Length: 354
Image (cartoon, rainbow, N blue to C red; front, top):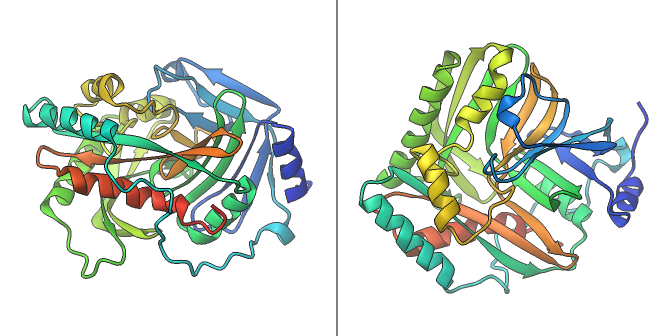
């Protein structure tokens, strides 16, 4: 297998080529794929099998196409795997980050909470975007994120259909190692520095809603063979509540299984179809590929898909939009939810080159 260097990657970036570079959680291998072609799929649920390649799917599968970048996946040269950045930085407050609650978010929160208090929904997830100016080198940001967040899926993707995105997501949607499928319920957020780690009733209820939803949906496609959790899971400067679910299912059901669980209540709401419609109608943010899913697919028996969280999109060459959200229940408090989105944006804002 031939090697690829950072020089190649920078040339592709300068040429605005379609590519993706990514690093799986708890791995030292960085993979690069220069797209020879991109499949744009508008009816993902109708696929009998998932084509091989790097998949980049939207939050709403009915609003934007599922993109699959196809080409040879090549490991970055071993001599260039590392990064000079030392992971000693502490969470910082970006001087450009908004300190006061923006009007759009406050308006959206009020509409969402009214629907929850009326009993229309058990849970809703409200997201927002915030624009930042930056001269940061995208490739260096990717390298820094790999070092800072070893247990996250880190990626940098550029594609003519969706633009350029960078993310460091802690959340598995679905993965298959050939012997079993694995998904997780990840909900509830606290600063890692907050000790002792005592979870509120709101966070525990939120996590339970996601777990119950996944247990019900995946159980209709196969046999759940193991469950572990909930337990406290560290992710960057935050911690979450996490439950692992393992199951066996027939490979011909994989696409339907993905569509059944996506978007999960961790990024959407309950009931799912009504929550998805409500978010599309009332949320000020156009989510596009935020809270969608991504990952490399070898075959139906070998893939790793992650929810697209802790991410940002370049809107111009020097402007990025960071996106973050949080789960709302009927008793959610505006200031607490706003601060949670600020904490989540810090995942990328705290990178030294930003």
